[in-house]
Image (tube, rainbow, N blue to C red):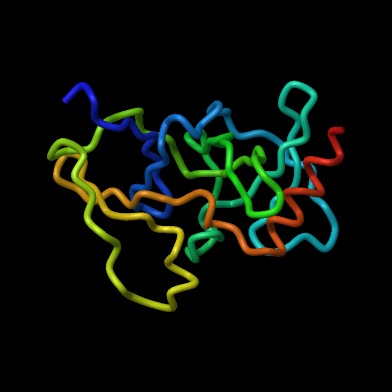
Length: 161
């Protein structure tokens, strides 16, 4: 269907997740991240993207999965998020791999996420779709980060000013 929403699908810990394509600015090969002392969990540090400091988070850690090893398929997805009281910000997510830009099966049908685990921990899953018969978890990027992490994002963005 031509009007179906498009998503960037990515692999994390053997699972498939997706973000709306309009929120993704670019997809980068893995690169050295400048670490920051006393950073919150999941915050890897900063990368330079065309003279802008971009904070990078490990999507595995954000989603509660075990750490994994980087490889040739590891990517950093640079995207736009919106945080309350701070507005629009640019952030990078390190993923195990990026699959494709695609539409979901069944004309983009999205099921609500199941009610499992603490509500605060699963609020970043917007819903479940399907691609080639497999589940795809749709992420709500604006709800993925803790207040402490959002502060780190804001601090990283101010370094570029």
